[in-house]
Length: 189
Image 1 (spheres, one colour):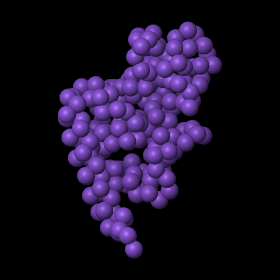
Image 2 (cartoon, rainbow, N blue to C red; image 1 turned 180 degrees about the vertical axis):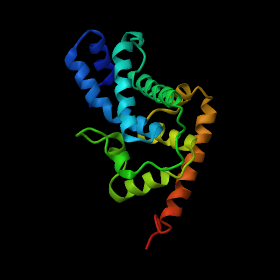
Image 3 (cartoon, rainbow, N blue to C red; image 1 turned 120 degrees about the horizontal axis):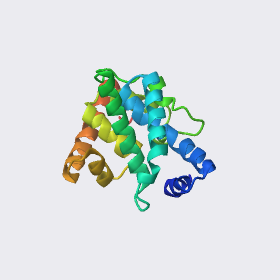
């Protein structure tokens, strides 16, 4: 995987090939964030497209020493929240269909596909659909998007201790949801 910070720097210098590579590397992550918030495949695609337009226009505002990925994910999250406000839509209380969550408009494995595989992945996605919005968001950012807890605290603008406790509660809630869906999961024969 190319260094995203280096690609971003090359994009700021006007390298069109770097821009294509950056989009290719990040589109799965951005779509994953968008589907999490939008809960609708078409709205998520539109939101992801808006994110990349904002990234292209805003790359010069990214400090050269600032890491690109947390900036991108913060931008994606904010873009989705703004889009929801404009649409005057609340996130429905339904889980994202597994087929939508797994199909991240790219040929290479998405962060989710790298994180989980097969039946376990499907079970975890179903269970994540049962979580509270805050807990689902923490798991998405930390375990799937692989942000550090400090980066999540900055992104969500909450204290680090809050992120740590939410992360712990989210994992407990996820384990309970998995057991609710499949009581035999994790039980040795």
